[in-house]
Image (cartoon, rainbow, N blue to C red; front, top):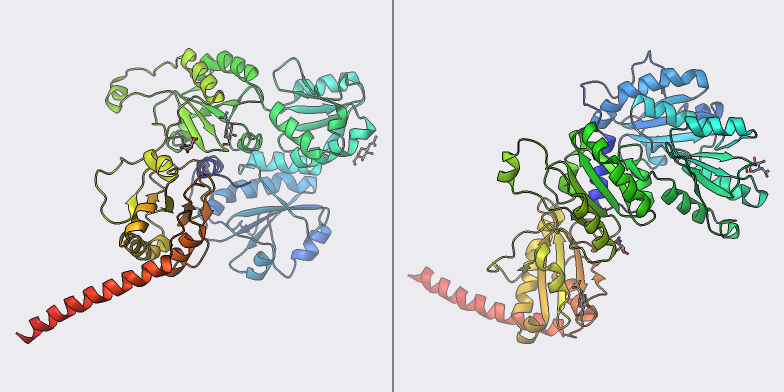
Length: 517
Ligand SMILES: *[C@@H]1O[C@H](CO)[C@@H](O)[C@H](O)[C@H]1NC(C)=O
Ligand SMILES: *[C@@H]1O[C@H](CO)[C@@H](O)[C@H](O)[C@H]1NC(C)=O
Ligand SMILES: *[C@@H]1O[C@H](CO)[C@@H](O)[C@H](O)[C@H]1NC(C)=O
């Protein structure tokens, strides 16, 4: 899945919350972490049934943070026939390249001596979460439970949602496959006495959530079963943290955040949010976020760091919504935290679902005057500008820090000058740019900077990505080919160059005259 920027930012915030300490990334040689090299890598995997491997670089900060947890987990797990290993990618470049390592640390799991199908480790990075994750890896994905007594005990003690099926042979294979993929977040149980085909028991909830569709619709359809589990297996009101975050993203639903200051405050709103979670099941997820640890994430949601706060992020559209917040001066004057208005929350949620809520768009101010032929676009007017059905609108999405953007800038400027030099072209084409780090452009699929899209006149809703070499000629040819205004850009360029040459010559004459004096 392609993660949008705000989702990605939270993911890294959650993953790396462990405090940084100055230590080596490489485990000490007297630890239980095994050092692997190209010499012993294959033979080691062939001899050990379950190996977690960390591909690292000695200078990498996150690798250093991970090190003490990794060492401790290795010593806990060694008695369970689970091995933790390290590969130093600055020494073992071929091995790391062969494994497709793109960043540090990269954690992979080699199971059942299979060198070719390593699994990505996507658990947490503390000792406890590494140990829990790897132990689960070592157990069968589906537990078979025969007696009622055992079953009830298992449900009572479960710390994560338990997905139960009745063992029906026609569903068995699909269930096992789903379990193999999702076992980190859910427990999977086969229980012949189960009254329903498929159900999920949430921790601290008495009644299971029962699958109400046709059993036939799940048979042979792992994706359908997975999708059901991912939505129904989430708590009504959960907690976003390093362990749970992926399941919120994977549910594909918008996420409503309650940022709280402390546990008492969370407790205060628990019943309210749990009720909302039940009511809006399958439409929107509700979860708490500890503002003390992850408060910075408010910024990614276009909110100020004023807690408690309530905000909703539609991760598919990257649109963000929130309860209105105080002016900074007013917030500073507060002597105790504000209370959230629960009626406003319900109304906001209803409006979002009805498509009536207004998203909070991060934007610079609309400039009063334009400084060059390139029109400066901002978040507030982006949609109006690209949606002008009479014009071909070319937009460059850039970041101030990006080198490729800087190289494109003078070419883009000249492009705008060429267009401006022609009467017809200047009326039918807009050459614009927008700083995408200061302005939200929900719905524009940006995968890097710069990205250039053309919104063709009359077909503005079907933007065309510019994917040619970034030259003046290819930009002009692109506008001619895909634009709705059917300009002859070659002619326009010829005329522009001729005029420019004439102007230069005139200027040149002037200079000569000056020289002669
Ligand atoms: C169900 O599937 C699992 C894994 O594929 C297999 O081990 C088990 O024997 C199957 N059980 C039945 C009743 O078919
Ligand atoms: C979230 O965004 C997606 C994609 O734009 C849209 O289809 C969906 O209706 C939105 N959901 C809500 C609740 O607004
Ligand atoms: C673009 O214009 C069309 C037609 O005028 C309108 O239906 C649509 O909502 C507009 N889209 C945006 C993003 O403004």
